[in-house]
Image (cartoon, rainbow, N blue to C red; front, top):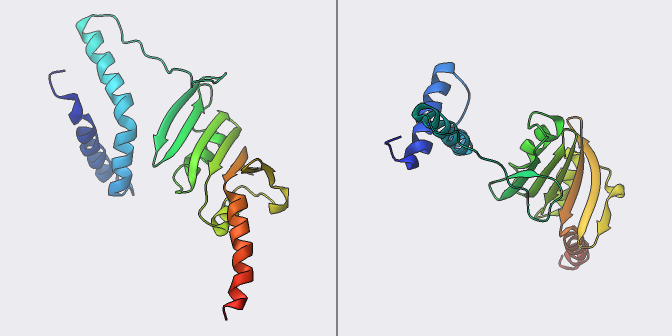
Length: 189
């Protein structure tokens, strides 16, 4: 291709904007930008394959490398500060994929791992106990079932038919601060 490859995200954004306008899809500007950025890599691979086949050269070979220290192979991506790891045999349209897609857009979410079609692990670092309770409600987790594994709180729940292991970082510190604040607040009156 004779054009600069750095223009692919911009041209993709323009094409998506035109398509959503023609189809009257309810996507906002930031959603279109995020979609264009997510699709840039796969579109570049498709363009490279098409150009390669047109030139008669050997096809482009590409693969996803396993995560370091991992037994299983995962495709790793990052979105808004949340690392998403998807097992190669898992489908993003599966129940676990649906749950993960919803979670990774939340500001407290730090890591999402989709192990298979029905199992995911979500790691969050909430800024308050109210945020932690919100996560518990999202996965139908009874607060009394939460256990501590070192500095991480762990519980298992469900979402959209998937089993979700919720990991909360810093929950004990938040709980201690909340208890301390309840003792201080009445004395300040």
